[in-house]
Amino acid sequence: MISFQYSRASNVAEAVRLMAGSPGAKFIAGGTNLVDLMKMDIERPTKLIDVSKLPLDKVEETAGGGLRIGALVRNSDLAYHPLVERRYPVLSSALLAGASQQLRNMASVGGNLLQRTRCAYFYDIATPCNKRAAGSGCSAIGGLNRMNAILGASDSCIAVHPSDMCVALAVLEAKIHVMGPRGERVIAFADLHRLPEDKPERDNNLNTDELVTAIELPQRGFATNYTYLKIRDRLSYAFALVAVAVGLELDGGRIKEARFALGGVAHKPWRNGQAEAVLSGRPADAGAFRQAADLVLLEAKGLGHNTFKIALARRAMIRALSQAARGTPQSQSNKKIA
Amino acid sequence: MAEAYAASSISVTLRVNGTKCGLTLDPRSTLLDVLREHLDLTGTKKGCDQGQCGACTVLVDGRRVVSCLTLAIMQHGASVTTIEGLAKEGKLHPLQQAFIDHDAFQCGYCTPGQICSAVGLMAEGKAHTADEIRESMSGNICRCGAYPNIIAAIQQAMGRP
Image 1: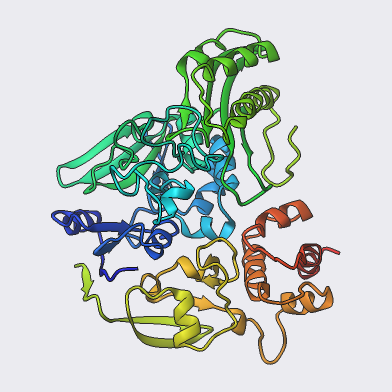
Image 2: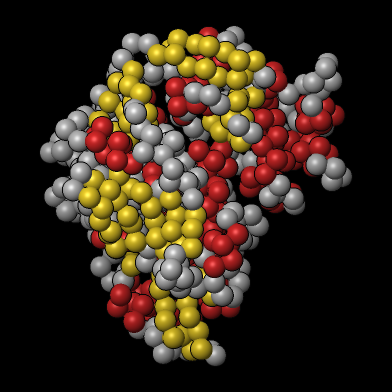
């Protein structure tokens, strides 16, 4: 870890001011990702701006019937928040599927949005990686790519976004509030993360001088018909091979609206509007779910080690949609997949 | 006003196992290294040093965290409890006694982290069944594989035979 200057900000305006004009600076909150990356010399900030004491740790109901979640709310506190458990259980479930309780106690939800890929080559500074060192090449293409992307990848990067929380937020269509030197702006969740294209060094569309201040959830929480199904190498405490978040609105046995997103398969949580639309108005049965899953995977591409993920994703989507339709969401402690 | 510190050394105050400790630290110091190298509290173990094994688990303001991914300076003013701070007046913490009763370790290297993690688990009050305890303890790896006895020990401490 290189030496850095440390500052503790006491309010949002001060945090933004400390960041302005400091290209080598980073905000730090929970530290669970950044401290690790600094130890590995992957992140080399010359200045750390500690935002962990900012007053952004509240969960509040909005006038529109939604929730405003401060960026510093800890992952565990959000997962167990009564309003989230009751109204947005897919978010609670996804949070509890991620990391360990120790890490969830530390990690902020703002930081969760911005966590970096776990691609093995991103972590191995002895190898080329376009995300870590722009223009150096991608070692995962043609390398050990078992954990890597099957959708939306490019010739320069096949990394996946590691978050579970974000897969649920994609389904809930959250909005992200950020503050920068030019004031506040609100980013639709689908526009927060990006695909790698030819700039994989950029994970998202935030400017480096902007600070996430809140996650806003709209009113609809899909609290009756939802699930978060995460398939991984171990039963707990591992990143997803494939994860699926689902929110359905049913009318009798028919689907009024379907939303589902995949984690572990792309550079961002993956939704497909066409596949969701095909479920609309259909009976909630296996035939409809198979058709939707096939649509999502039309453009899926395996690179050898990760080709199994295509079949796995198909089955996981069908299973998750069935779980949600039945109203029997995946338990995050009893690991039997119903 | 922001408090800014030069890169070389900073003053940090921690309350560790009930004792106030004034320290002068390199800002890069993790809480784990401060506990072990500055305060000689070597009960907290360094396993992976990457937040993946749980051996360094301690309680900060009553919540379990991995001390290897915590910069000590960010815990200025916090209360830290380590394995050395659990026994009271010469009497083992119920979880320490339960780990002995159930032979819940072999080499013992992960044990301080396991016990601190279990103290946090009990304070949270979210895990009740064996499945829930297993899931909630999944951040603590035991390479000897003492898991069944660890679960039994935690159940004993929770008063669930």
